[in-house]
Amino acid sequence: MIKGINVSEFQNKIDFEKEREDGLNFAILRCGYGIDNPNQDDKSFKRNLEECEQLHIPVGSYLYSYANSTAKASSEAEHTLRLVAGHKMPMGIWYFIEDDNTCGNVSNMELSNIINRYCSIIEDSGYKVGIYTKLSWIKNKIDKSIKEKYPIIEIKN
Image (cartoon, rainbow, N blue to C red; front, side, top):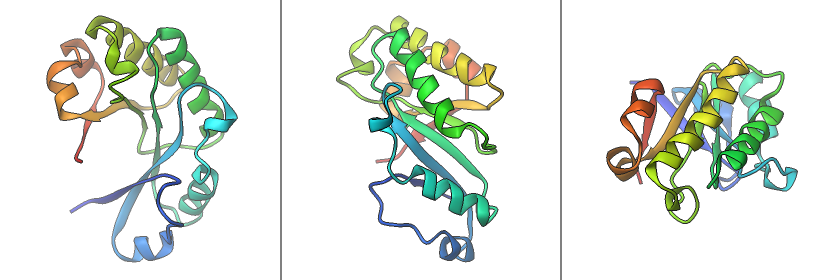
């Protein structure tokens, strides 16, 4: 079994050394949410990233999206890249897209445009990229072309 964790500022301070001893194989760290505004950086991202790198725990990152336009998706990509600059992300960068009131409130075609904009900027910067979303979006909102182009992780709530 491969064991990974999803970590953000909402968890207490994670003891990554203990997690590694308990079989942790990787961590996906939230870098932030929304557009490129330092106030929207995850307050624990830097600490979590440094801990994982020091302990040689492979990491990836995700940004929680509120994009309802391609312009906002571009800003979200810049937000992500600002925070991961200089760091390897062997587990990839994930676009966490599930907010029903913002990105969920656009047409499926516009959602595809939003996803493609974010992901192409991340890819053009040399990172692996994928989508992180809930099953209902995989079934009803995410276009087949997106599913064929990018890996998708289903959120289990």
